[in-house]
Length: 289
Ligand code: ASP
Image (tube, helix red, strand yellow):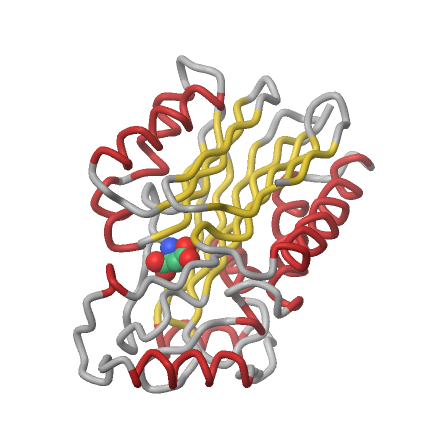
């Protein structure tokens, strides 16, 4: 039986009902693909694409803004066979997750960033697109009003979380992970977080798939997704995720993690106040936060 688990970010979730609706719909999209014998990679990419378009989450059309008021997006995909592709700080593209997938499938590179990533997306036929929500402009204005107009803001004090991630296991026992984010409110232009970084925000092996969310700089330092994936080699997903979360808590890192193992067990956990998540498990049951 296939399995899919999704998160909509860790932190303080103000619009829980919208998150729940968005996660439910994303799960249904991913599940429909898996249930018809489709690939885990297609399931996670389509689920994340829906979340990028929804404007509910901090990714794609709903992304948070840089200090300059621009949108810069990070996204990644990875499959259990070890293949990985990602984009960082990419501008003016609607679905960075699909560009990340094309980096994996169409190039010899792993990670493209900034103008180079944008150029690649145009060459691959992705149209110029930029959506800046009024609510995001107001959030940035409030952020600056609090005295954060200088560069090098102390991110720990002003974290605005809300990346999305999806992990799936298909009928052929393949595992895939997809991640997408607008990053952290008020980030410096050019900043790349953990979301597209191999081993930090995303990791997959033949036995496990893991996606992390939260304070990107700290997640990179912990190499969190790899840490949890390695643990999953000997433990069921929930135990591995809980150990990873305990380690992050000890180091005061604000984060959340979802994962699954090849037996179809899922795991989730967070050190923040809350995290939005949902899954369709191996008995076909849907659970939402
Ligand atoms: N991890 C993301 C970043 O640091 C933010 C988030 O998960 O909300 O860019």
